[in-house]
Image (cartoon, rainbow, N blue to C red; front, side):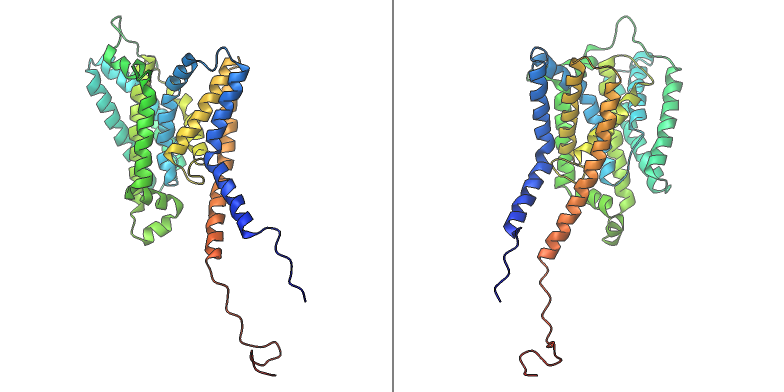
Amino acid sequence: MSASPPSSTSPSRQHRRGHAGQLVSTYGLLALTALLFLVFSLLLPRTFPTRDTVDSTLSDQSIPAVLALAATVPIVTGAFDLSIGYGLGLAHVMVMHLIVNERWPWPWACLVVIAGGVVVGALNGVVVEFGRIDSFIATLGTGGMMYAVTGWVTGGGRIVPGPQGLPAAFTDLYDSRFLGLPVPAFYVLALAIALWLVLERLPLGRYLYVVGSNPRAADLVGIPTRRYTVYAFTASGLLVGFAGVLLAAQQQIGNPSVGLDYLLPAFVGALLGSTAVKPGRPNALGTLVAVAVLAVGLTGIGQMGADFWTIPLFHGGTLLLAVGLAGYSARRLRAGAGASRDAHTPPPEPSSSAPDGGTAGTPP
């Protein structure tokens, strides 16, 4: 009998197809950013591709970017911190309260607020892990408490500086420039690189990923899952405190309800970022790319004169897309790992029994 024809899908073709799919998953969001920039530049040639637009985008999206990085760290461990919006509101109000009402020097006010963010983040982690409460419920509860403290500090109103205004050195934290670009963009870049180094290059980051992917396996190999989850929430609180300082320097007024506006964009950036650079898992550089996509899209939509309701529509739709893509990337990653194991598993030995009951190589 003639040999059967080779399969139409050869291993080399499968390999090339898988490699192409991996490239699309890894760099697809980055390509989408460039495509959106090109489209809006063609549609709005006089206003979009300008230095002013780039500067305003880098400045305006710096706080959402920092908050998205803050949301990313607990997600690495499989938890969600819904208190980050409330924490942002409390942090920026406390900065304004200490500088305006208590007459503190602004460096001390900023340091105390950032340290307070660390404490609040650690408490969130303790409530989640040692209180055995789901992270959604726990952080929603602590967020409500932070919102109450914000209202108590402000009395339900706004904190407005006196005629002398805020110290120039404090407002320069947001308004100054470095190498011709807004300095908040360099804050975001530095934080993203630092977080990438911790998550991708240090044992701490590898442990966090293990805790998030398989807590039981982490326990079996001796990783203290509770402690590392608390570490993740603590890092999130640190970033939220820093974002609150930036928000106070930007707005120069204490608004008790402003932090909630940043909650949805932060999670959109964090979840969408898990589909880029390292598809299938949250990562700092992916979050940065996702924030860039959102920034370009929102800037273009705004310059086209869209109504105010298009912004939450854009964020909500992108969030659904992000969750769907994140789930798809995770399934693809698991499938690829399974296929790799199957490829390295040797085929079973042929049975020594002949079909007619004799032994192979022995006449019946």
